[in-house]
Length: 267
Image (cartoon, rainbow, N blue to C red; front, side, top):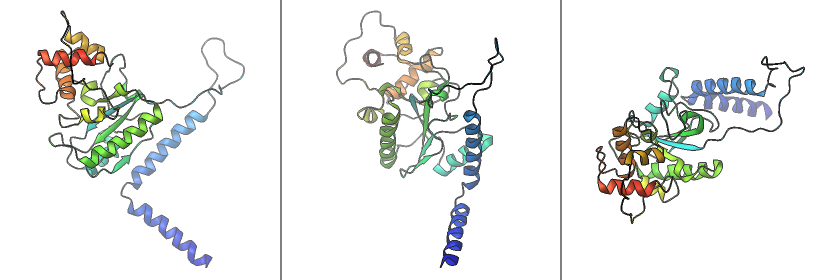
């Protein structure tokens, strides 16, 4: 009996590996992760700065870095498989922690504690290395179509887990266009930011807005929220893409100023 079972188990393992088209990428993932693990498990070497210590010594009080932001993207591609191929090709030099397909399938492509290459040149408030403090989520969407119900449902479940696991503040769920206003326009105006805010993922203006005080400085207020206002026109458009959506012209009319004035109290 044992002679029969062992070949069956071996065959099943071989089949599972050969049937997975991403086996080469998974092998490379394990290789890189193993290299990182080996690097960090070594006791820090004796410092050559100042007077050298006699013995190497490692502290016993530490843990892994935890992400504090979630950045939402759309893939700008026409199929989930294309994005996965992009993220499993070294030449692309881009990645994300999660990819969510139109049917709601969630691909967890990178351990949350590791640094994905999803934000690029970006800034939010005083944070200029977004990739080091965030989780990147890509939604399969070409940018010119609504997001599917299954996709948003899976996203909501994922965000619920991430917020709980890492104690991520409500205001720290933002979009790629928010952190890179002069370069990016994702997620598009189809993205349901208002709906997500109802679950505690990102802020949204109140239904009743106060009048804007005299001398209200819109650009300064955008900066207080977190936007990089070096290109103020791009910052205004990014703000409107997120919070107005129906109008993304770089015009700060009275209604937009009222929304901005309301939001700066939430950040």
